Amino acid sequence: MSEVTRSLLQRWGASFRRGSNFDSWGQLVEAIEEYQILARHLQKEAQAQHSNSEFTEEQKRIMGKMATCLELQSAALQATRYQEEFKLEDLKKLEPILKNILTYNKEFPFDVQPVPLRRILAPGEEENLEFEEDEEEGGARAGSPDAFPARVPHTLLPRLPSEPGVTLLTIRIEKIGLKDAGQCIDPYITVSVKDLNGIDVTPVQDTLVASREEDMYVHFNVDMELQKHVEKLTKGAAIFFEFKHYKPKKRFTSTKCFAFMEMDEIKPGPIVIELYKKPTDFKRKKLQLLTKKPLYLHLHQTLHKE
Image (cartoon, rainbow, N blue to C red):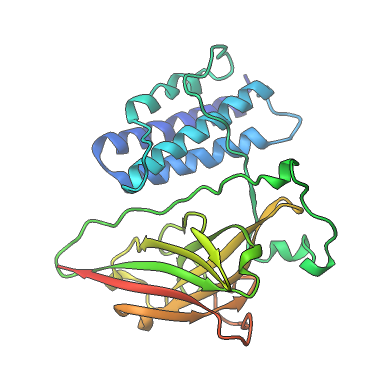
């Protein structure tokens, strides 16, 4: 085993222990974040094509299954809507497998499948890789791998504990208006809070895949809990909503458009905000409206204060 691989396994093991410790202590926000970070690392290594990897294809397949288990546990901690729970005592069975993955030769203890890693591009990167839809030819054939896109991991976090004198914000993402709403595959929204320099102020969250598409709207009807008290947000910060969807012909997840809400717009009740063309401009300096049509992102805000 090379020093690089040894160090990698040690970091993964430490991450697993942090997540399971947070989980056992009831620190759910921290546990979810740690599980999701480790799941992404395992997925990335499982999909890696570099020739100098010390991991066999079978070992990579086990990594993919472990990432699925971490996602299941993360989902079980998040919301009551999840029916199937993956218990902490089950998850802990993975620790010795992860530690000894180079020599592990037994059957994986859970009947799960690896979640294929989707390529999620940085803002603007897709501009160099994709063509306009009307310039593309062909499509995913029924029965081909691309006709069945993998699910998108969700990373919605639970509400922070309440504190006297400070305000928590719940944003219900209701729907988004798009002229081609029915053509989007596995659409979801990435929510982030950025300061004036485009730096993250809170953890980034992804919604579940949209619940339905109807006419010119993609419906989500999902709550996003702001991971910082409103009074503690950086001056000039904004909440960004990036609408993303999967492109099977290009095999990556792309940002279609984005919207944002500034601090003076945080008020209880419904709000509609304008949509802008990609790439996402977190510094809000070069904004271009997506369309002249009356199509918006529809939200509903609820403020919680003791």
